Length: 97
Image (cartoon, rainbow, N blue to C red; front, side):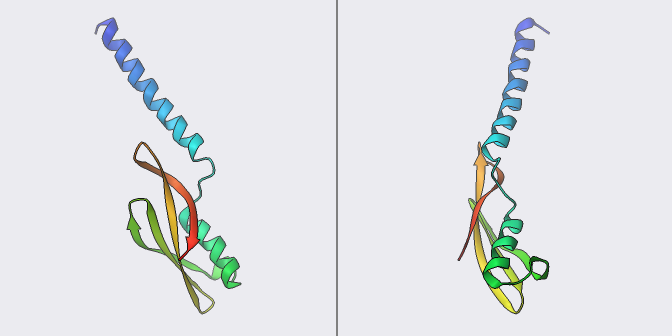
C-alpha cells in the first residue's frame, strides 16, 4: 500500500466519523415519533399514556402518520422526520391532523 492510499483511506474514515457526529448534533432534539404522539395524545385526550395504543398507519418520505387510540377516542398525527445526507435520523416534531 502506498502512502497516498493510506491517506485516502484515513480521510474517508474521518469523513464517516464526522458525518455521524454531525447527525448526532443536528438531531440532539429529535424524538421518537411514537413517544411524541403518545405524550401529545395523552394530553389532548385526557387519557393516561399507558392506556394509549400508538400505531404507524402510513410511511412517506419526510413524514410518518400515526394513530393514537385509547379511552374510547382516536387521533391521527403526522410526524416529520429529520434527515442528514438523505438518512433519517429521528423525528423533528408531530402535529395533530
